Image (cartoon, rainbow, N blue to C red; front, side, top):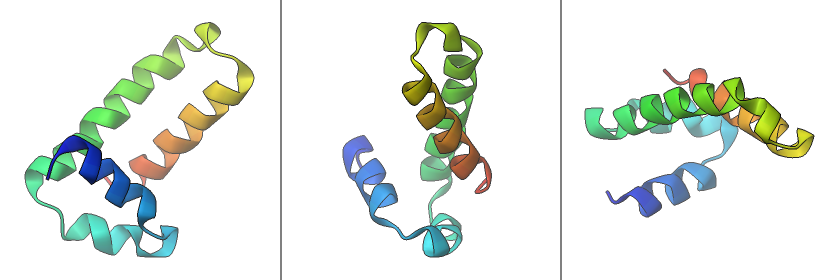
Length: 69
């Protein structure tokens, strides 16, 4: 699954079905999520470079993804 298709599919999954979706992923796709969480941690750490809205979005995305891994 290419990168854009993967994240588009992720965005289209209902929050209630997210865990089932994650369970059926390949290990490569699960690593994409792990890598994104690592990237978000770095971005949030350097949060002074972002406005409040952007930083809030990064934090929410990290929390949502972190629940999966």
